[in-house]
Image (cartoon, rainbow, N blue to C red):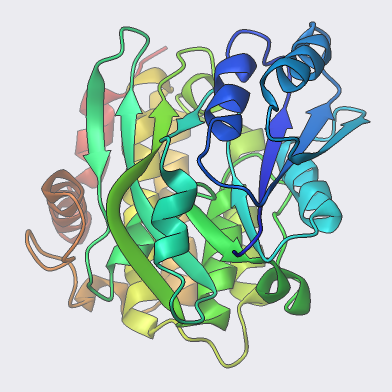
Length: 328
């Protein structure tokens, strides 16, 4: 039976960490390792972590609990990778939880040697309502719809042999991690079951920080580092990498638009498309831009990219920003 290490970074996660840990310790699987990195919490997270593991670790799975000063989620996950002793690694965020059959679903997929196996996920709100469903499909684009560290298992040796780590940055540490990983391998498999619940926590970093333009969450630093660190013999076709950055830029602009000042958004729009022009000069002709061309992605995502790039080509994107951004 293949061993799986679960890496959970925790920062002030007292409200939900017990649920997260219980979902892992409830697995019908006998060969797992639990690695919890307390990233300088100032609440009683560590106390809850210890008591939960004491109470619910009935199978006596190996557990590693490490505390560090607050260094961010990227460094916490990187430490977890370094500490792991298993064949495979799985990441779980403190607010989230996994299905009871997470391990068995992935274990049944390991009939051949894969570096990454990706499953589906549900997004649920505080009322328990499912607001989003994503399931990977067997298309070349599908893996790019899942640039999250979770809802997957990854071969540990694949990460360590290629020195693949998370990037400490204000936004996109998971994008960097996944794109670099995808550039090193095409040994990727999909399982068509929902194995992970992404909890829509209204106070999480992603919900609070990424709704207004600021220097900390400028993605260009992440973009540049990602391009630089891709495998020289990259397994990612150019059109997919190009389209990924197009999609990310459109998403980032639309996500920040209504909470940010007009002048900030106009400058952001110009900087992001200047970066795109510099690094992917033919991006306007990318063959995946269209309502149904990025197969495996949500129609809403395809629609947003198609409409925004059409506005950009016709130079009406600035008018759009002026109409829907905040005005001082």
